[in-house]
Length: 358
Image 1 (cartoon, rainbow, N blue to C red):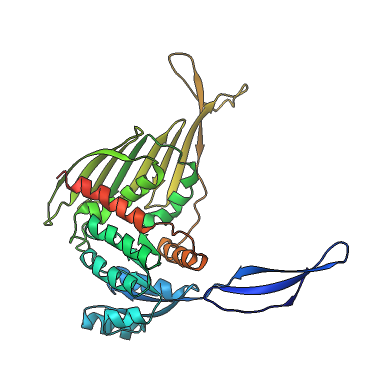
Image 2 (cartoon, rainbow, N blue to C red):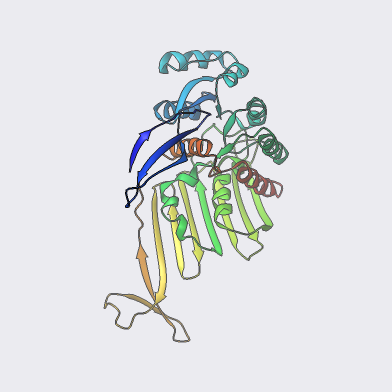
């Protein structure tokens, strides 16, 4: 096969090329097909706080984006970030949105809706940090606006890209009991919302991504210790298929912990999001000639099962960079983002059910 000519008709991401193929009989046949051409998407960041600066740095180094600049409402902070890190600061949200194709929203939760609405109505795709918005109604409105304006959106539920989770994601099959602990030392950032929206929502999204059933009921309790909103919360989510998930979140712990356990038929899967380690424990039928060191359990009925331990290979990655770049892929390929606006809305809806129990 050899290429005789290449016709470049740029729409946005497509071109048409023609190939001449030499068949086994020596007959030449001409055919054409479409080839996707990827180009760097112009992106701007709204918010240059702690997380915003991380996004700026990663977008700058990504070969899938062209970082145009950022906007931050604090003129002093904007000036410092521009001076120290070299990023272009815009004077207004509107001027930044006008200059880009993708808007990365890394602002406080209360301003997510207003920023996203402006971006979508201007025809921009949006990446928006979790939680998607303050209210479920706002989230639903963004979904509708995105559909009407034919733009894509992704929500920053970054734990979906944690390598410890992606290493075992395909092994999690119809879990019936899930236990999650997410504990964090106190940090003033994020206290504008309850711990459910600050921390627990990560685990809510993970659970909803693996449990293919509707939420039946929720029981929860929470208490405010140092903030105006609950700093510690515990929730029990029951699903229509019988699955039960217990979640605990605290932002005033003495130590950090981000661990989830998934129990399913013949398997137990543990994911440590903090240390990025995974473990799979499986129970299978005992072979005819088991190893002398094999761990074998026998129940009262005499049924024997052998326990197998597996530690999947966890590849090192930058989860934030991965979520940003997979969003670029979704835009260029016109495919569905990994964490859609619908996913973010559903996670927020369940989170609000938990908060309503307090």
